[in-house]
Image (cartoon, rainbow, N blue to C red):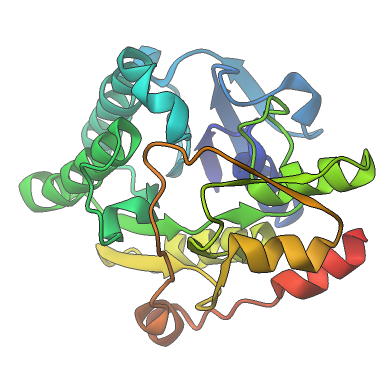
Length: 279
């Protein structure tokens, strides 16, 4: 197939692009470099540097869209709400209109913040991601758009330091601090719990979801949570507590029952195993 990956120069998008190419697909990547870097280019893919809002209904024909190209950080979203709106509302609307007018199915990378106990109004990021999730579902009802929605949970693995500006994953930050012999910084009391998922497992879930376009939702998580304190203990070394951040949720663990039963998906990597490999 000819596949469009938005955000294909970012962390998850780069891993997805590589896997799609390895499986023999033609891949077109659209990325505006707000969270991706040119160093992540994978040989064999076609790259177009532009905002998703610039994708019109006459964009080149593809058979499938993986839409990962949105604003993707919680804490900065409070100060950059205009940017969140542009990328997650205007950009995603353009992608959905392209899919509608060209009868192209979409796999949407949703955020598990929508499913948190704090609700989808806990941050601008969570609110706008949840809004697009609802819009994707409505396009399915209104226009018979075929879709799969995949919820991410604290992804880690190769290319996780793509942002490299302090807003990448906590696993990436801890890894860098450990290597530079700095204390591991923990926001708040460190008792907030997270489900951590290996990026290779997320990619396999995305591809399985693209093969079963039944307008359903799938949670791609390990199904096991750890506190940030427990993660720091896995790394070892000293810790330093810093001020809690706005938008942080207290709990977040995936319910993978539907994902496993409908997609036959299983996570293959355990966080402790990955960290032991780093150490």
